[in-house]
Image 1 (spheres, rainbow over the protein chains, first blue to last red):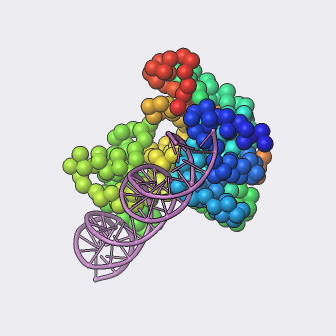
Image 2: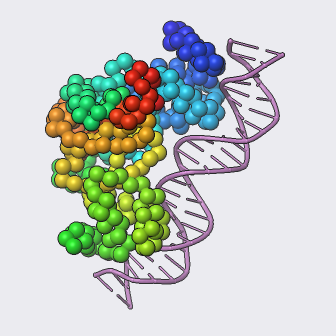
Image 3: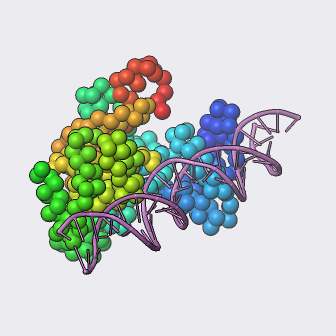
Length: 153
Length: 153
DNA sequence: TTCGATGCAAACACTTTGCATTGGC
DNA sequence: GCCAATGCAAAGTGTTTGCATCGAA
């Protein structure tokens, strides 16, 4: 498969190796799709479920490796919920809507956000790398449950 | 001071108490200003330095409490760096520029971002709570050090 | 054959919690 | 005086690391 070939190339280029574990982890992210966010624990569980066993330590090491190769990218979410997703070309225009009650996430695109981010960068003399908007709210289900007036988490 | 009065009121309203520890922690955030981001450890150290001693456990409990009262708010930064800052009325229009190399942060405002976030929320049926844009880049200093062409962290 | 990668378990950093004591109201 | 809040230390999380073994190149 094309991606595995690229991965092999990227790794060899840096004197690193393509191991079955690394391959399986990247394949998992490809299988679930670019819009899905997985924690280290998620990856570990999914791989166990799918026969292949990879140690949690290796999952952590691989998530870091694949992120450094820009094949994955880490989401910026509140608290200790580190999650990763497949990196795509349009990353800079790919933002998240996060339900404050159930944690569900949705994605959306918005060229205006990219513009605003890049204006801000220029204004402060920064060289832009990426911009990420996280919108917190209540998803339709949770908004319905708490009713109109009550407080949110 | 006005804020302490408000805090007392908010707490009593919920059957909670205004303790010197809570007061000192909130005052610290007021003293450093709304643009400053402190970790639990920062707060603990600063208070030790300033004579008052508050246990780290209490710092954590108080940060959570003050956040739940919307007097503080937690930043959404990558990795395990939980930081808090004084909440202000214009929170929804207050975003961060983060240097990928040295960690320095700047703030900026952008009504367009708020618009974009609220449009996205409506489109997905979410009830908007807040939106936060984090722009990663290289600050002028770090961009200068790495030179024009080279890679970023 | 070599040296990077893995698995395991121990070590870590950060955060939360149980419980006796203190102190705000 | 009552019950919430504190301090301490112990227990949890989630993540990283040392080391012997394994296996990709």
